[in-house]
Image 1 (tube, rainbow over the protein chains, first blue to last red):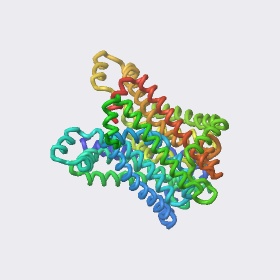
Image 2: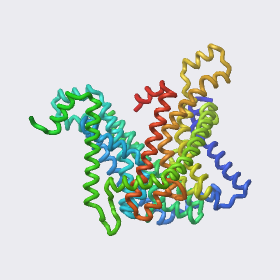
Image 3: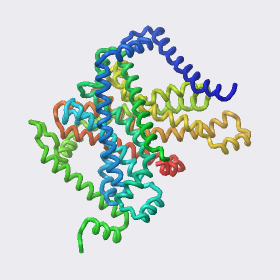
Amino acid sequence: MNGPGRLVVRRILLPLAGVACVLAFWQATLSWYRLPPIVLPSPWAVATTLAELVRTVAFWRDVGVSLFEFVCGYLIGVVLGVALGLLMGEWRHFRMAATPAVESLRFVVPFAWIPLTILWFGTSYVGKVLLVAYAVFFVMVVSTTRAVAQVEPTLSRVGTMLGMNPWRLAWQVHLRAAAPMLASAARAAAAIGWIAVVAAEYIGASAGLGLMITNAATSLTTSVVIGGMIVIGIVGAGVSAAIGALSRAWLDYR
Amino acid sequence: MPTTPDSIAANADERLPPRMVAWLFGIAGTAVALLAWIVLSRLLAHGGGVINRLPGPLAVVRELVQYAGNDLVHDLLASLHVFAIGWIVGAASAALVGLVLGRAQHLGNIFLPIVEAIRPVSSIAWVPLSIVWFGFGLTSKVFLVGLAVFLVVVVYAVDGSRRVPHDLERTATMLGMSGWQRFRSLVLPGTLSEVLIGSRVALMSGWGTVIVAELVAADSGLGAHLIGVEQSYDVPAVMATMICFAVTGFAMNTAFTFAERRLLPWRHDREREDR
């Protein structure tokens, strides 16, 4: 077989065979153990449930709420995180002073904040937005500080020689040199932020994908639970791909 | 002599060893952060009705001491129990699956894309399904933690099983090693050391999953305590429990990083460069 043909087999046919294997195993488990749909619905049932879900308004409202909370929190977290990270990377004494506080808060994982955000903000959007911002903020602070500290010293010297003041040097040289590392950190932060939204919605929310699947779980409509998980995965992958595409478009001078 | 912060800093830099300076600034920064917390708590206390919205650090410490004298050890052991079983099961199965999928090329081509498709769906998304399947209790939490750890470690295991250095491979051929010998002395050690690294990386995601699973199921462990004090609007106790989670996570991370440095000294230098 020639080169491209083999590639098609390897990249498309074999993975499809894998998916078929998993689906067949799923269906076979069902038929063999005669599992009721409450425990495990058939792949076909999940697919039809998903098809019905996307035709309802409530579903799109849940997706919209979750995405809205995510996007607001994400933007706040990235902007503040990069700002503080830049400050920490540029100003050595500030870095020394802020490191203990940042490092100890970093270990208070976002999930542990969920009950407190519910006490403070109830089941409203605000709590989730702040939770996502918190999750994203610490990823960005740590990676921005590291990226700025690793910028090629020659660049800084060239900037100083051209008469840039420290602010311009930080803004126009260091931040741009660190941009590729920031872009990959921004993608990782998106995955963490998205899952923080879902987790927060499990525990206290008035709408959203997390609430949708916990409600489905308590009413034992397992096909909706699995359908919802698939949607959470797709949205997460979509968000990550969008941020990757945006950062590539933005960084195309490389 | 002017006493602006910068001039103090410059003077300090000249006189003191650099580590000392870092310590001094760290202490000063922490003091400022604590002061900001106290001021904020004074401003915000009793914000909405009877609830103490933001207790000061002292109230939280008092609560922490009280909890430590009561149920802390019991709850912490329950959480760690779940975590340890899930972590070991997850890492071991990831090592096995990674080894098989990484070495058997066709199986890898067939099933690795599926692993890759499941990976972005964080283990957190499995919480409701796991409760439907296994109910509240140990099994569902162990499943979730195991899944979280598996999804992280499997990547390291596949990577480790494939990345046998080329010259070692050639040396092995030259020495006439059999397939089994090659597996035992080249592939297996490489894979296991990567699995060890992956298990350290997976610590935090596994611990985060324990938190969420316990918050949702709320039947035992630190997470159940957290939900309990949240439902009685006890903000100082909520913050004290959060600190317990953080300290435990930090301790596990530190211990494992130390162990890893001892076990895999050659990897440590590379890790540091990667960061």
